[in-house]
Image (cartoon, rainbow, N blue to C red; front, side):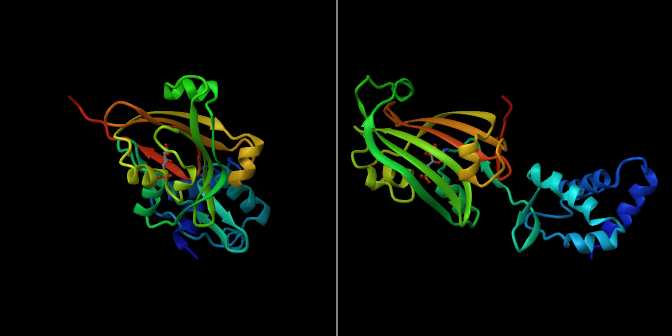
Length: 248
Ligand code: GLP
């Protein structure tokens, strides 16, 4: 057992005894994650152990932890316990692929295809890709995993004139485009915070209404042609987007 946690909790008890115990414990655990005292992947003691050491009821401990799980600070794995959530840090300024981002972090990217087909552009795709109505696109709808954990839902449209065969995309769209000499060199990206719909929450294995980052990317080839229009919904508890900003 982490004795400093016990000491700090006792100290918070003395300092702000009017605050409910579950809130003080929640705040304390959050501070320890934010300060790095408990790093990503750190395993918390069991509820029973925490309750015993802090002389709290298990209900109080459960309530403190539930709030942090909801906020994506902690994750619970059935049968294994409670851990500090691992976040995937994605640099915003480079055009990297999902596969590359995960591999760079030593994780195992995997995709499940929900759709992989050739079809006529929808009005939204036609606008985004600057195509005329009736043009063909390759459409991919994928659930993207790190190992067994679903991280993002992703829908991509690629002009058929660039990618003829959807089955060329195995694990990575960018690897397929690269093999055709059509890897994007520039992209416009839009990020929004959203709450997941019931269907998306089910796919991503999170609570309905859970937070997500919706990212739309329109990518270009060196000659200015649009090569992809992708909408992704990344689980808010699993992804950090980081941008480097420079002065003049
Ligand atoms: C990220 C981007 C998408 C891009 C995808 C390619 O998820 N947001 O716009 O299509 O990477 O990833 P991969 O090459 O692994 O299919």
